[in-house]
Image (cartoon, rainbow, N blue to C red; front, top):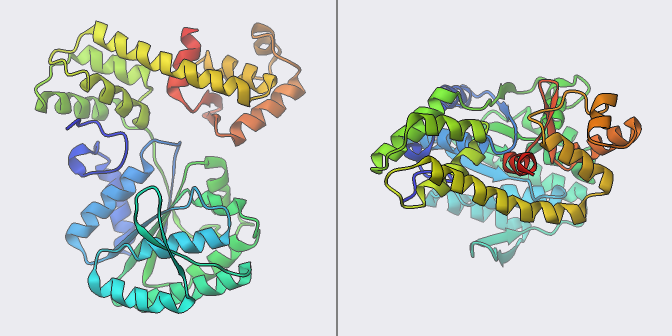
Length: 367
């Protein structure tokens, strides 16, 4: 099996370090503290949560629930996602009690076309009915003897619901729960930090703040080196450092690169083989960029290309930058910049604007 996973969490063996972060999350859960976890996209938030759940499951009797609400668009979707994940807890006594309680809401039985799993669909006539149902469900699970931990990934999604007051409603219910701990995870940093740092927002200072940074270079170096060695493949140290520099230590892109490299089936890794993988990635991104050309307005596309050709741009609206890349006016640049951030194509880190997709950035630098 390829030791460099790019999809679901499997076990600590395939998970790179994060010992301190895992212990911190476990401590927060064990002591009943809610936590907000945020970082760039695909740096490893979901993996960290599932790694924490893995260790908690070995040492405690907690009921652990992971909910990804990225694809929810309203209050109904949120309640449906929460309930269906609660019912996936693999404990017979829990399921029987939960099912008997939830069926009073008269859900419709459906099948998920992606994984074939049985799911329940709740049809609420309005937002108020959905709220009442969620309130009943949370209060019901609050009465269980065993502590429940609910991790809500992409939590900032609730700010996009048509029901604009749902954020305040949810906070008003969560603050009175003693038997349920929450981990709120988010990747849109500006939104998630505003939710918990802005004193005018309902969730202000309601959770312990934890920012997940990129893995340290030496930690990732050791992980990659050990995985190649354990599978009897030879790779020189300078090659690993080259990979980490090329992927900027971004978890998803580093894993993806190493997955492709290991998958070549070659026992001794060479610089030519690494160059081949780089070239394949760049060719793939060329196809993606062609699609972007049809989706983005010319001003946004031009700005994206200009930022991508650099490792980071501090002042994209400066006269020097505009002149160098033959861009439009300052006002047009600022408008395009805002749009690209909203579309999660670029982000701002340490006063520099960068492209989220490291491989796309490499493609633009090579072209």
